[in-house]
Length: 233
Ligand code: ATP
Image (cartoon, rainbow, N blue to C red; front, side):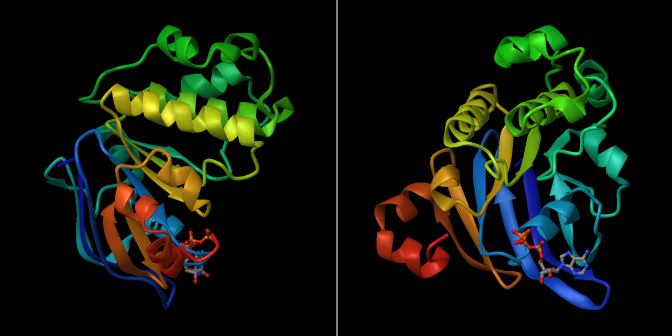
C-alpha cells in the first residue's frame, strides 16, 4: 500500500473541513479525487503533505505514520506535489526552479536529462524566468520539478485548471507516463471527465466526507450515478 488515510478530521481554525475521511492509494495506482467547490479536496492534499495538520486520524505512507511529520520530511519520504497555483519562483530561471526540486528518496531518482526527455520543450525554456512562461509551460515546469524530487506518489491539485484542452491532454498523457514508470498519483479535479480519463479508482468528496469510492470504470459506465455524485462538474 502506498498511502493509507484513516478517519482524518481536519479543521481550518474552528471550522471543520474534513469529517472522518479514509482512503487508500495502492502502489502505482492513479486515484481521482472529485467533488464540488469547497468539498475539501485541497484540504485533504494539504493534510497529507503536513501543511494543514489533521486534528484526528492517521496518515501512513508505505506503512509508516507521517501524520505529525514536517512537510520537508514528507517530501523526502517520496510524496511530490503539483499545486494548483504552480508555486514557481517567478524571478528565477526554469533551470533554477527545477534545481530547487531535486531530492533523493527511496524511490527511483530522476535526472534532468530524463525529465527533459519527457518534457522536450523544457530544453528551450531553461534560461527563461518562470514569470515569462505561459500557463501550460508553468504546469510543465511544476510537474518536472515534482519528478526531480524522486516521488513514489504525486499529488496533482487541479492540473487542468486554466489550461487549453490540448495542453490538458498533454498533462494527462504525462500522468499516464508516470504511472507506467510505477509512480502513483492522486489527481484532484473539478473536471471529472479529465480525471476519469487517467484514473484507476475514484473517491468523491461531498461537504468534507467521502460520498462514494470505487472503480473509475464504474462511474464512466453509469452516467446516472456519475450525475448524482458530481452533477454537472
Ligand atoms: P476548491 O476546488 O474550491 O479548492 P476544495 O474541494 O479543494 O474546493 P477546500 O479548498 O479543501 O475544498 O475547502 C474545504 C472547506 O474548507 C471549504 O468550506 C473552505 O471554505 C474551507 N477552507 C479552505 N481553506 C481555508 C482556510 N485557509 N481558512 C478557512 N477555511 C478554509
